[in-house]
Image (cartoon, rainbow, N blue to C red; front, side, top):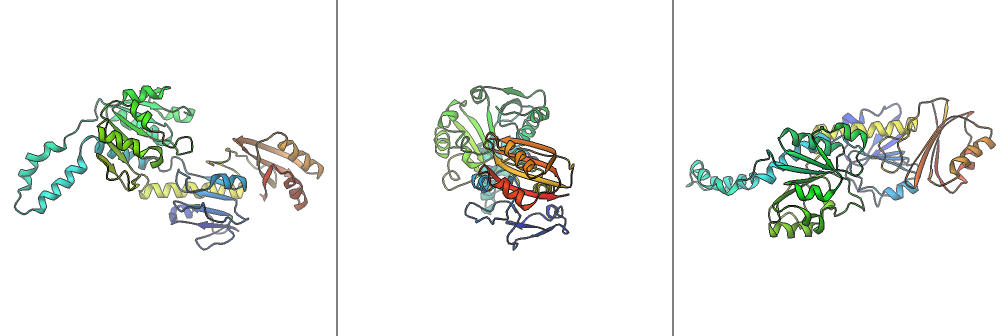
Length: 390
């Protein structure tokens, strides 16, 4: 029986993917094997020695201490693409809100209606000119990041009659295949920034991408550009954006990540982090997170991890070793040598690396004893050894 602790309210549709015969699930679970989380911050959470995996029902993992997890041999999953459609639809609203002052017009009409002496129908005909804005048709849009969300946004923009430019130095084959052939993928970010009437960013927030849109990159944009950020607040330097808004260089900024500094700035439309806030998105994320967790705990497979490579292998024996280790020379040889010394035969094996860490699945026969596990763990570069039976 695996113990799964829920750190937030997780959709019942997702929890239903965890077989009650195999999983004990709840917010009061202790000495958990896995954690399902949405927005709860885990940086100060004391992980029990039993913890094997954390699955975040969402794409971003800023609330999880990735490095500490990696060093402890804890796999961290996310759910890329599960909320992509919800974000894409909000981008459509953001494009309209960045173009035509719908929000300002809405508030103004309500203010008129509060005065009983005002004929609202007549007032709006006289006052509507204050809220005009350009159409999207035949305008150009630059999409930074062409992953699951960016690709959907690109195709959506094409359907609106926009000229679409995309930039992604890490564009995968799968992502490229999702793009309509009319999307113009550029290799030079400056070309996109200098060309487009609208810029929308859809990349993960890391140490390398923090303030990706800063004084320099914003300065490269054309005058009157309209910028959307429905990815992560930290991707945009608020001070640089406010300065560009004050000068008029940026005509409008729509962000899904309000804070005290940016929210009341000139020409900002600040939304309350609505990107993935749909019932469908929450269900999709919960289902994917639960399935990732289940597959890892039961089979040792790793899919959609942010700190380990993707490793999947069909069962070929009744005993499987799951080994998380540092990506350094000789570790894999040390694993097979240690098993050979203990008279354990490796019937099938997969090993892949990602950055500083690697993950090995080994189907072995006969089963592995506690002494064999201790033998493996005597190697300081091996971080976690788990034995599961089929």
